[in-house]
Amino acid sequence: MDATLCNPVLLRLIIAYQHGWWPDSRGFRDDPLIFASSNLKEQVAAFGDRFAPWLARHGLDGVIDLMQLYPPLAPCIALHAAATGNRPLGAAAIAASSRFSYWAELMGNTALLHGHYDLFKADGIRVSVQAALQSGNEALVRRLYAERPQDVADNIEAAIQSGHLPIVRFLHEETDVLQTVDVLELAAKHGHYNMVVYLAGEGYDGDFCLLDYPAADGRLDILQFLHEVLPDKRLESALVAAARRGHGHIVAYLLANGTSSTKALELAAKHGHLDCCQQLLAYERTAHPTRVLPVSVMVAAVTGGNNAIIELLHPVQIWPHEYMDTCARLGRLDLVASLHNPGYFTCSKAAMDGAATNGHLAVVQFLKDHRVEGCSTSAIDGAAGNGHMDVVVFLHGHCNGNASSYALAWAAMGGHDLVVRYLHNVMKAPVLDDAPERAARGGHLKAVRYLHEEGLGQWTSRVMDLAAASGNCDLVAFLHTHRSEGCSAAAMNGAVEHGHLEVVRYLHEVAGMTCSESAVRSAIQRGHASLLRYLDASGVDLLEHAKARSPPAKKQRTSTYGHVPS
Image 1 (tube, rainbow, N blue to C red):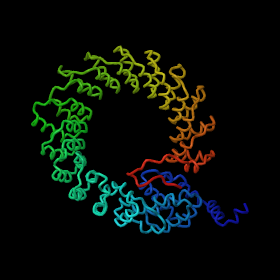
Image 2 (cartoon, rainbow, N blue to C red; image 1 turned 90 degrees about the vertical axis):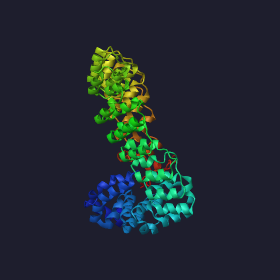
Image 3 (cartoon, one colour; image 1 turned 135 degrees about the vertical axis):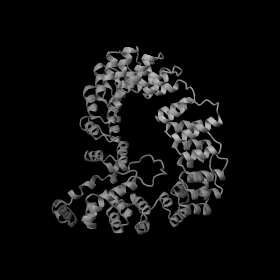
């Protein structure tokens, strides 16, 4: 105690803590930015919203005290400083951390992203090549290319995606790195018209689906330009892409250039684009008046649920059984009845199977009363798996429906314990060996309890392993108490990896289990803050686990940021 009181820094912090300084700052202990592993730009901005009012109240001295009390905040504060251009704050954060080298590049990337790189470049920050290419800072890109040409070549997409034509012009005119990727395709994909014009003018080409990108994005300007300068590129797939997205003006342009596609009509129908359907159908009827459209077009229309499109396509031809089958599967009793009444539309067993699986009892009853196709075991199996008890009872009582061994297994997997009971007690349905595992995987205690009470299925340690991974602590406790199979190390590791704190606490304190290094690393990477605090309090050395050798991560070319180290 005497040594503590003789230390002026510790004494000042203790006094500040006792006078209410820490309660004002308590929320930062578990700040989401500390555990961020993605979307760091948004996370830094959100941290700034929380931190700026606190900074205004306490000033730079308060920040220094805060970082001394809780060092993991130093990189968060540094990123806020980089984003806002606050160099004194950034310098304080750098000085407060002994691990600056771990996050120097994150700070540099953030400063570069917000236009403050020059303020901090003397402080030892670094920037990634990807961030430099995205920034539009040509001078910086030139310097990095001189130092790391291969890194620049590996991150060309970042330059194209950001649309900085001067950087692309430099890379084309003074380097050869653009020869390694399909830069024209990337420029078209990201919608940069001027870059597309420049690259096409310099002789760059693309593959046969080059026009799909502007067609899908509704960029008629890019599409027209590329079609004019590269007339060999395929138009049919571009039409499909435009119809899927509902770009009627693109569809009109492509039809005027002599291309057509029933696949385009199918996708336009599925996604509810009436204007595109009208254009495509009119062209199809004119260009191919005797062609029979595939039933997939009508199925897509019913699936999409746009009644105007259904009415447009219905009278085109006599559609085969898949039409009524789809109507039944989607519960469209109105359409099923209207198709049945004329007498010339057909259906198959799939109609009742699909209606039953999706719980459309009224459709099932209509088909039972008015049609003769009947159903297969898939009807009860599907209804059971989705928990449609009323349908299961109706099929069993009125259609002589039988269940396969999958019915009870699927019902257990969905946690439908009442259906499981009916299938076993009333229908005497067969049981798959892995039914307990299926129920445990979903964390379904009632289903697992019933299977246990009736002695159904095969029981192994894997049941409890799966229960732990599901996060249902009550289920884990039930299995630990009522079954003798126990569990393997996978139970604890799975619970840790998925952040299931209550399960981890139970397995550790009741079953005496510990977790592996890889599980802890996974929890760190996923940012399970509450779980990590518990592991730390339980004596797990998080720092050693984090530093333990692990397989190298796959290179991410689409994200500038990664996990924020403390």
